[in-house]
Amino acid sequence: MVEFGVRQLRPSELPLFREHLLRLDASSRRDRFNGPAGDAFLSAYAERCFRDGTSVIGYLEYGRLLGAAEIHEFPGAEAPTGEIAFSVEHQAQHRGVGSALFARLIEIARLYGYSRLLVTTHPQNEAMKRLARRFDARLSFAEGETVGTIELPPLESELPRRLAMA
Ligand SMILES: CC(C)(COP(=O)(O)OP(=O)(O)OC[C@H]1O[C@@H](n2cnc3c(N)ncnc32)[C@H](O)[C@@H]1OP(=O)(O)O)[C@@H](O)C(=O)NCCC(=O)NCCS
Image (cartoon, rainbow, N blue to C red; front, side):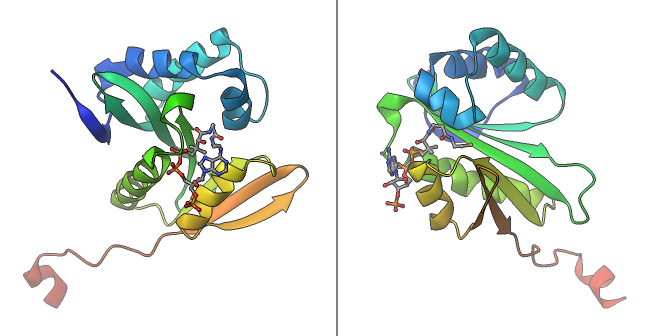
């Protein structure tokens, strides 16, 4: 089946995610993980995501996963908070894939009831800073890291009419 577009990955699609991460070049790996990331680390990371309930959203082209975004729960925060991250393979960058993943990720985060999302990168990562700004992320810099915060307004109440009137 030829498949194009952005969607959430199914549990059986761990191999697609792992292969995508393993194809990232050294500079994308450094930008994504804030440091060098070897193959063993990336394989273990992919497995952990599929084990611990992380939502993984993918951009697929001809059945290959060329971009991904993850939402991890950030436990212990006062408000329900998710930590998000992005990776787009070099040949697919600068074509709007990161923006499409970000838009879908926000929809999914709202369905989970997150009211705040955090994204961390290093201060020289211009692509990520521009992407975050496009989605109104507030960016702050501290100790060599850039942390972006996105506040998500709550979903409109979808209570059945009789409950809302009670
Ligand atoms: C950051 C990243 C996800 C952006 O993905 P993308 O598919 O290239 O993003 P888009 O094409 O939607 O572009 C988004 C914005 O980034 C800008 N951008 C993309 N690549 C850029 C680059 N190399 N340098 C500067 N700006 C860049 C675009 O111009 C656009 O800005 P605009 O909204 O002001 O026009 C991608 O570069 C990537 O995977 N990098 C490696 C991993 C990483 O840095 N992850 C983020 C940390 S979690």
